[in-house]
Image 1 (cartoon, rainbow, N blue to C red):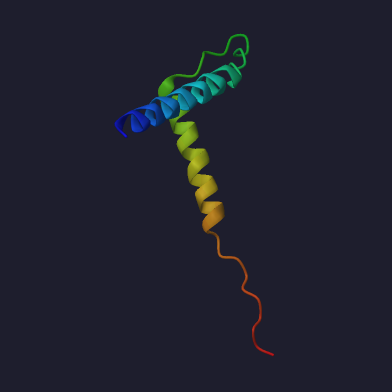
Image 2 (cartoon, helix red, strand yellow):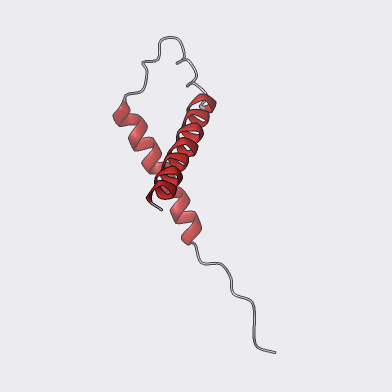
Length: 71
């Protein structure tokens, strides 16, 4: 019984490993920075991502008009 659990765990880890490898290979390398422009720092990239997420959350939280139920 334990061997089935161990085999299942190893199989799950193998699947996750294959998916991670596939995902890492599909990541498109960042475009080369424009000539003369400094490469963005990790802090600047982090702030940009935070701003994008904040904007997406705000857009998702906007109240949608409710349908008229009064007939």
